[in-house]
Length: 581
Image (cartoon, rainbow, N blue to C red; front, side, top):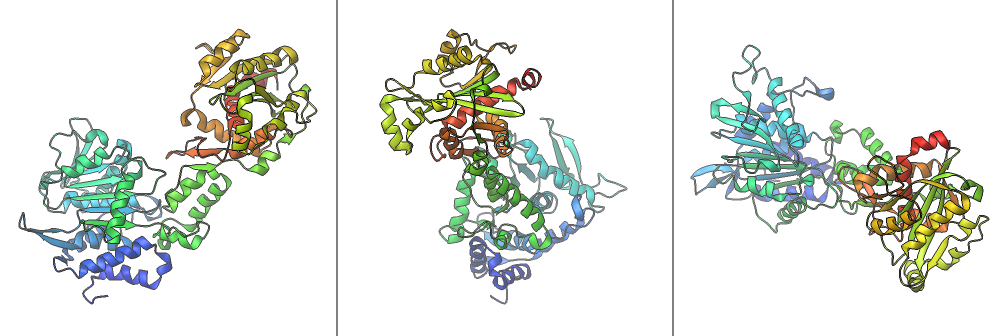
């Protein structure tokens, strides 16, 4: 290391060399990149703005948590970031001025590190202390409410400072006002500057000429036009700065992956753009179960930002609920994760298997559910009968005769063995019905519900179906007297939108019902056991889930049918509590 290495950079680099196991390969690559930059003939280091920023931070105070009321003291890695952002300079021949070398900062770090606190301080500095006339500082996110988090933190910092907000004259240096779109903005009259929170709807802002752009939670932004518009609008500024800060997300559809690729290319030396990429994440060969690697994604652990107790608690939640594991990996370890996980526990499902009898369905109130989304493959209809504190599951599976051999080989499932299972009750004994022809006949499904109604006295209050084949199935059910549900709730059959908004909460509840042995099904119904434990859950960025057929290990039709029946049950749950407790 060169003797001219600046203190804050030297301190961080010494830490990496002293404890290399606590740092991922991206951080080590950044160290090499900065060391090369320090040897450049065109780039130099000037501590003036670095010390100005660190001193500026000391003027403001934390407002929450155990640091509330204390001045903002930057951590080791935050001083390093500040040193790199504000310290490296380059001469701009076009405008004849010394300017910041880095024009863009990308900081990818896990939750609870203090991202909003750190970037709020940067936003205030760019507004008030960066020397830019008529500066525009924007805080951006996918939703304006998210962007307002950084804005409100920045305002709270200013309010916390007796220097920036003198008690005897609080409007001396800054004030707020409403813009013409009725959104609040912070004004700094001394430089005719302002700060404002925005979102994708701010692209058409009149006179857009940003000096600083703070982008929070990049992984959630799908419309890259927001980034492009603000980035391209900075061309008239002397030394504009974009600061991007985020955790990882799931499988991204927006701009995150393209910016991550730029970061990786800069760290590898494939690119020489003026980008500062600091990525805290566990390495590809790290085992998430190994707690010692968690610090790679959580550099604030030595300062309890977050505490290991908190991380351990989140990890234990993910172990208990596999649907939460992708979120834990993405948000707390910054490991890019697919959105699907196998959702149900085989042992919990097996504990729900019992010997069933016809008395469990005879003369009972019931609900039904149908998954007929692929009539060329396996299809399932469910009757769900609640009584005695349990939800009893009777099912009928359907498969086309001309497809059974092909499907048996493809799915590695001996389907014909379920035509006669040996169960004591006839319904579970004759679990599978083979439809003539090359497709499942929806009439056979309607006939099964009619058979249960006529032969066993079952009264169906509701029957739900995926809406893909709903119209055709509904006509056949209506011919048997199962009328379509009206807007006032009268009627039996109704379509189900197969998406996270509709399915997330019912799916989470079915997991609990298996775990608590509330569901009961025949031990001869191996198809339900197979379908349930095949089921993968697709998880969105908000933690909503739905069955994912593409990511599932094999057929899930039996579970999809049960889920539809459970949604039907939720519609009339109170009636069951009254009439069939």
